[in-house]
Image (tube, rainbow, N blue to C red; front, side):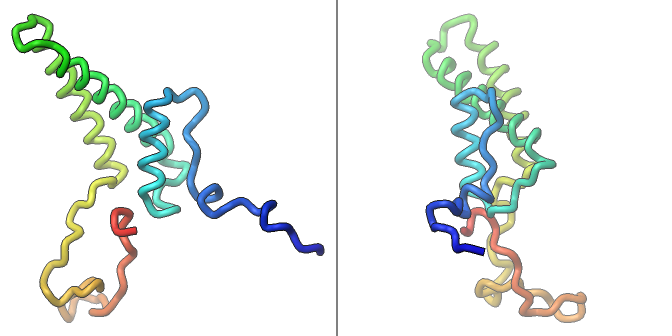
Length: 139
């Protein structure tokens, strides 16, 4: 079989990073690219694309509501409604983010013995020097 030119082979980023779905709003697509680009290559699989697209939509809408809220004076009677909608949209985005495990929750060492390896107490069934996978925010 003849050798392929390096230009014919797609980069790893193109193979492993899913593109935003067709028809997604540009601001939500930008959030999609930021999220997918910050994760490990196989972190988001096809089974989670719907949740990720909903997360991106909720984040984009929360950003729009935040901009409207900042532009609205405190004395405007419509401001409480904007604040309520912003809180609801932010809570929705947060719940999607939790289900996708996007936040660096609990990524600090448990004690000083960790040194990049997951320290486990003896007798719990895990090897004490078992290397854990790097988290998306550590890449």
